[in-house]
Image 1 (cartoon, rainbow, N blue to C red):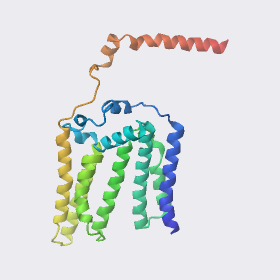
Image 2 (cartoon, rainbow, N blue to C red):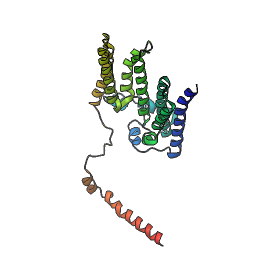
Image 3 (cartoon, rainbow, N blue to C red):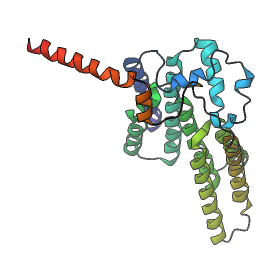
Image 4 (cartoon, helix red, strand yellow):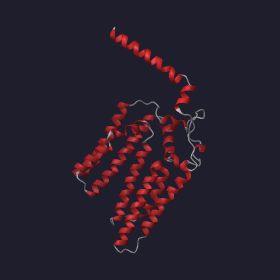
Length: 273
């Protein structure tokens, strides 16, 4: 019982730590790439024309639900999306805690893993408000691995095999976004290895790994088809040009440098005075 409290206590502490971090290190204002994201769906989050687009599968569809909830419930709060990101990260840690408990991984190794999970190398995704879907995706990756581990070890429940076939559609098409390629590649490698191991063991019934491989491949192909129709949400007034021509055409780029130098010189004179 004490070990179980340890396994689940660390994810809770890590989640609280990250919540305190975003509360102390941020303010509820829009910046970074979050500006581009909200401009792509505001002011009307109920507009179906913004969802039923050819490249919808590349836009991480669960984001649409998150945006709707944020606008309707929280009145568009960047803090709400940041908190969702922390909770997604905490859910990832919980998945690892469940696996560690089942495998009876030592407390020391699990503590080291939690330090990595909640380390602040993820600060940008935590503070810019757009990372919550990615943290949720990783939690679902870990969950898929746990189900696969149960099936492979002969401890599967009655629905686990079906779940393995359904999860790639949900994760790849709904949540994973740009991570779906490596997710699918990992599944295909795992299923291929299991097929070969069963062949070496003389097992005749190996079709489950072929079926699961097909179930993993189909949503990736659908994602790639959607990606072939990709349209970028850029400002219509923006242009594509290299740096030097842009600076020559827009004098404001280099007119600011003399002002900076004058401020610097006046600051130095003030210090010397």
